[in-house]
Amino acid sequence: MTDDIVAALAGPGWGVFDDFLSRDETAALRAEGERLRAAGRFHRAGVGRGKAALRDDIRGDEVCWIEPGVAGAASDALLARFESLRLEINRALMLGLFDAELHYARYAPGAGYRRHLDRFRNDDRRTLTLIVYLNIGWRPQHGGQLRFWPSTDQAVLEIPPRGGALVAFLSDRFWHEVAPARHERWSVTGWYRRR
Ligand code: OGA
Ligand code: MN
Image (tube, rainbow, N blue to C red; front, side):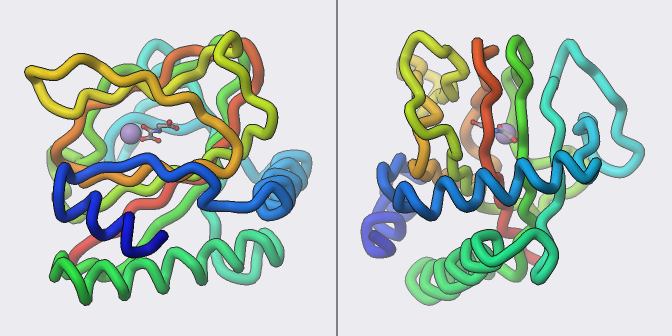
């Protein structure tokens, strides 16, 4: 799968990869996220870098940053997997990816994230976005799709947040938004940064 991810980034600059995680890995990651949330470790996500503003109308998720040795074995395994992916991508594409920041995100029913780019206006280090979905048994009628614009002259794609799937894209190029869902919607999002 690593080769497919590298090829997608080298070509169109984005890709969707079903079964990046097994069902067991997905369930374990979700359980670790639920435990962190029960322990009060999530906070409402802000908009922008630095003094981030809380804007329900723009972005409605709550997040918890993932550090090694904190969340549990499944999160640590994902960090390790993302790290080897980083090395492979650097080797193949010379993107100069230096480190990664990862967080859990949980959208309550009705919450979404309006159309945006992942690269901040005042901080251009974010280079590659990876999103892994933790929603086993997700159905189209649950909503919550990632709406993704491959280019300005192409129609928007509707990507369901199906458990175990990975979405990868170059952070500065692709507009996207999260449609509100009828169920809670979980993911881990990672951004690889260059220096
Ligand atoms: C983000 C984001 C999309 C998704 O966190 O920046 O756009 O499908 N997430 O969760
Ligand atoms: Mn985004």
